[in-house]
Length: 325
Image (cartoon, rainbow, N blue to C red; front, top):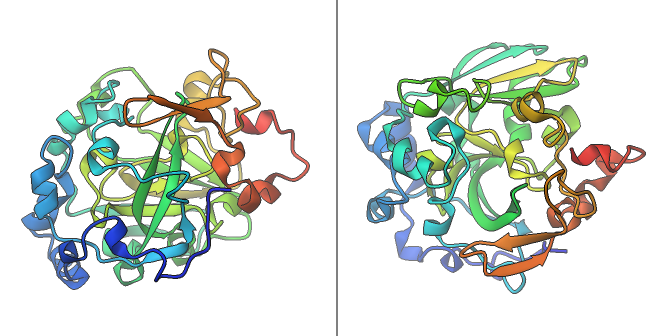
């Protein structure tokens, strides 16, 4: 197990960033509502320009003690490691491309289209989709199918909070998440590396699970562009490619979505993408993972990325091999 139930006294915010670095969330919310250049600038910060990220105002979100990786087993990665080594093909296929090119992305104002089998379709400003007064921080594992892993302090709300606002109908069995399509700012979309826009999807019970998270921040601050600003999903028990970034559309469907990687290469990247060390990728073993930074540390991969106790009941009676690709 990598999760511990702790009291807030056991996990002070100072373990991640100094208490003096936390500013009023009310200021951030005002900036977001006004669509000011300050928030737009904050959303682009990080990576090569880490000093600017440090100057950005913070989301002073309390840490949820139910979702905290054990620091003795899974020490937290540094900001520079998290926001400078990314998969975000909209900005290029290299791991360093997002931090180099994502600063061109405009993230304010931001709207999300909701459609499909729901009672409240429409276009919503991000402030309508995310309750910024209910933000929380979670320190969770992230595992990539390419065998690298991190431990990341995300800030956001459960995806369930967002879905509930849309009032999905009983016939909605799945939910799709679409990434922004804007080749003028995301030059990788001018290539044929993937089918655009990027689409990911979850079964409804997966999306409504308490672990499934809608992310708007990192290390207590506005989410940097290269990490999926201004809102992305993170599903801790699945491989990282399931975590769609820069979400602009949420669609409820009766049938399983045709997700980008399943369409691109279904033999290697299927719909489910649950972490299973016993099922090999067609080109490599998934039995071990390499922890950033430097990949010097190789460790056994954990079933469901260490969250088996929380999520394995979602897949009772299903073929375990099929579930992982």
